[in-house]
Image (cartoon, rainbow, N blue to C red; front, top):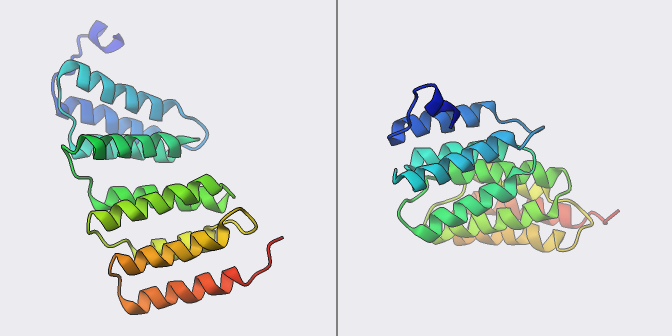
Length: 186
């Protein structure tokens, strides 16, 4: 509305993507404002009949992932994109989501671990191999002493194996999960 008053119109995906990228750049962990703006822009695109591109969704996901409490918004957006089936998100998008889950898990957010397992399952279903280093970081970030901590670490290893990662990577993950699972819960 403000932009129309300035004589600026948003008529194509390029102009919307520029704003979505600005939201992604401005987003930070102390606020949810830019994630909300990004999701509003996607809604306005639909209302205007402008088809969002992979770039549109990736920028909105970045805004969500960088924002306070944005993991839930990012997860809902990925689910929406997958449900529509019109676009296939690139592995980098899933990596961004896994990085956010790992960061939140390290802050003792057990919900983030469950989201990460869902993301790994999506990758497996899409025939995309997850990044070994991200999987190891996730295993290490699973909070100890929470419901299903040991099961979650083991499940990450299983998903790595089911995705077809190299034997050495799976064994490294297995050893890490085993060593962490032996630590008594606080």
